[in-house]
Length: 76
Image 1 (cartoon, rainbow, N blue to C red):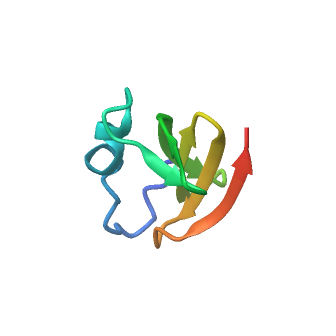
Image 2: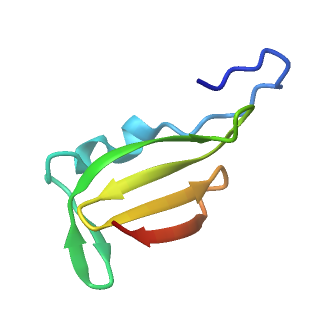
């Protein structure tokens, strides 16, 4: 778990607001013109700070930074 009381508060991205409707297949990601169901999403931590978040689809792991820019897309 990442927690550091000395970090200044930055606005957090509300992952539930953004991705909850994708769970269960109500909405789908489109990657390479294929629809992908989202299986999970959560935070990435470097051991001290939250550095981004991930979205796990049926066939891909997408990693984003805190500016919401895609950093890496990996096949599962």
